[in-house]
Length: 269
Image (cartoon, rainbow, N blue to C red; front, side, top):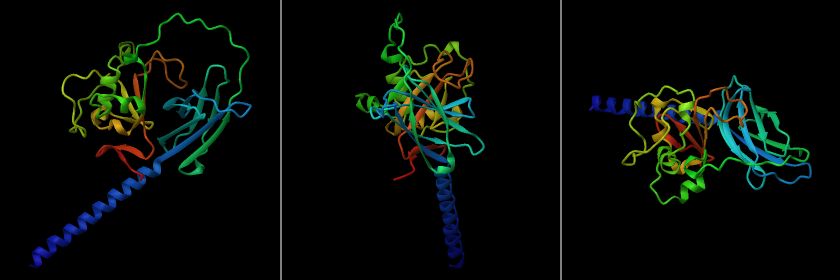
């Protein structure tokens, strides 16, 4: 009886310790996440939709991409590095480009109100290239994922089934080292071949996820707000180095985060 009691007590203590560690880890993870709310207006006060918004780390690394909605609003979250500086850069044809350093003393939510000035009359633009077919377009949003009638369970499914030719130019870029995933997939894999750009780096809320952690099969499709793909030929985004790696930037819906144990999951009610 005493031996049994000792075992039970020690088990309870161990469980309590693990529970505390898990809670502490979750709190720490939430503590590193910062929400950014950007309001974009012109000089008359009217909202500006369709503005490309890029979060730059240390003035060189583009870690989050977003586009302002019909209300001129761009909302995103990112996982901050304490020793880095961050700035928001905006671009849209017909308006002057802006860049604003983030003041992280505002704790976990930062609000920016940016006024973009219109430029003079633009020259006539003549387009000689045809638009990219849907299977190659570098943007994929939550609405398109949700409206698909196919089985879309993971990031792998979303890219491989809805953008199967996304990586058609990656052979011109620097190839990242692909390592075989060491962990079992968090999400069941669809049967058959799914064409994803295996050499592309994956960023989740601005954080690089090594390929051996298998982000392709640990990000739930229903947790994704948007996906953006960038290759080395994209010169419209500031901060990208010459001959950059092809990269997939995943922005999760508010309240969701990614970690090695659970993949993408809800961290805030």
